[in-house]
Image (cartoon, rainbow, N blue to C red; front, side, top):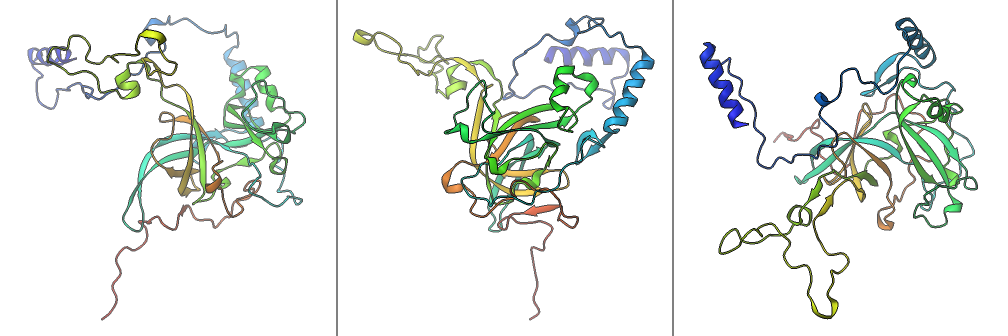
Length: 372
């Protein structure tokens, strides 16, 4: 990298355009930069004429397909900061049912699909700084509801008495159906929802069932409540024990030879001459599903469907998908009834930002003067 920069500077000086404003120095990565594992070949290795399938559609037919898609689903639009389509539902969303059973703490509600878009600090009214993570709910709609008797998953989740619960299939981020297969689009045929990029299943109680086509937004939760967030951790590839488990390593000098970042002894000999299961050793780090529980919601923005949750240890990389649902911690479950089964209608005069009562809102006055 340094040799490339020096060669570029020398070439500019020889050409006579070595003015300070014309020299562009390549930015060198910092020492703590983590190089991600290369999961695929560089783009210049791929042949330019290579295609996944033979596209036999002419330009006129392609424009005709685009017109049909726009007539059926609407034209592309940006709604609440998300690229989607103006008319996403073929079937009109049913209104809130009137025979809703009362909420109880034992009821399991549906969750949401969100994207982790970054971190941001908030300050409490007592001056304490709180580190938060921003999660944006991305265009969620209910695709299908499976009753308890018919829900038989291939991989059984770790839920007690699974036969008492149903399943809600939620889709996020609508996309052009011409880019999807016929079988995948068949999932959305009877739901009235435009085909989506992402799907997720949530185990729910029969009382919290949602009809297909019901939109889900950030109003599904309230500020002050606690949620659990599930995501896939950042993939670091094969790492040693110093980075994977936080080992100190050996000294840098005083007779140490080629064992500076090695694990050292991994077990004794004698009667049990083997390595104990669970020994911390080098291996693949990251790319695992993890759940962080009991995160408080400090702030909600209804304009862009963004929520500020506690902490900066939410699993996943920036712009990665996460799943949000009510916490299962018994001491942090909501005491008051949340929007049940969800928030069907949003008020026109609802505030754009909803703050927790302990969070300082910078739009408010901080210093007040009283007459003497």
